[in-house]
Amino acid sequence: MTSPTQRSSVAIVGAGIVGLAHAVAALDAGHRVTVIEQDAAARLASVRNFGHVCASVQAGELGELAREALPLWQSLADRAGLEVRRSGTLVVARTAAEEAVLHELIEERAPEGARLVSGAEVGNLLRLDPAAAGGARPRAGALLPRDLTANPRTTAARIAAWIDAHELGEVRFSTTVRSVGTGVVDTSRGRIEADHVIVAAGHLIGRLFPDLAERGEVRECALQMARVRAPHAMGLGPAVLTGTSMLRYGAFAGPAAEALRAELRAARPELLEIDANVMLTQQADGTLLVGDSHVTHDAAPPFLDERWFGILLSEAAAVLGAPGLDVLERWQGVYATSRTQDVLRAMPTPGVTAVSVTTGTGMTVGLALGARTIAAL
Image 1 (cartoon, rainbow, N blue to C red):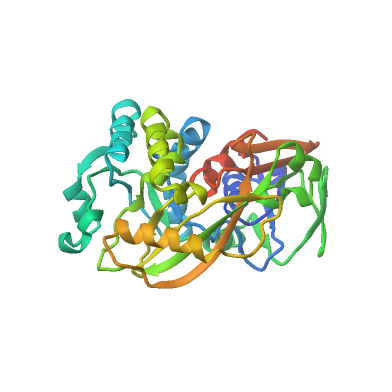
Image 2 (image 1 turned 90 degrees about the vertical axis):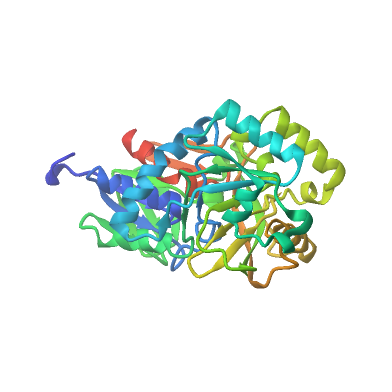
């Protein structure tokens, strides 16, 4: 660590989870840190998600980052008072094709601590009523114990407060960044000088570096989510993934997943039409965060499709053995997506690093990505 007279300064554009992750890593490395955020608080991808730190089902570099992030989450939870718990993840199989994917996952990739569980055990974990579940009774499941669940509505705010209270940290909300150059950030509240600038603006990266966003094919992925009442007393259990989740995460990839995709294309085409990832996380107040659909735009329109909500909610209700779900809130999430990389990294000008997670996994990999970026400065 540098001495107080040698401390370098880091300016970070964006107070979403990825920007905050870089700020935490920079403070831990002894740098002076200023975070600049255009809104009065985080309002985009970092609060419009499941709060699921879904490390066990990532693959490749995302898998490496996810595993590195788990201990960082636990350390930061203690320091910043985050609402984070080791919930684990339960992957529910309701068909033979889905069960085959779980066997392939456990037998060939074996996430740490993962084990197959019976349909009865799945029912116990979700506290399903056998009489009510009917045809929705699960066949089997996979329990992935290492994953975490955070409260997405408080996590970014608490990390930002911890940074702002740090003797070397500052967070400037309601401050628009006009331009970024070597050693300087021009904002609506004046110039900020720094030895290094990190731009973690998510899907808005193109507002500062349009050519970079165009080369990286960064677009906006819009999704539909809801907060619902739990249909029965469930306690505070694992996050839940389903058959559609098996088509999205790298750890499931293989012949069994492709067979499942073909089965869904024939039997449930509406799930593929909306690119569904039917999943949920259980919150401390007894509600469930449920979703989600995916569609890519150059600029996501704000409109929500009620038919799509009907598909998602009816499928989630079937997993929970419920006739329906009582919706409390609905919203649209937006995150950066790209066909060419999982994480965009670039140095558009000397002394400036641009970083954007382009897979919707910022909560899962962000802390480790921040640590790697700062270590490489």
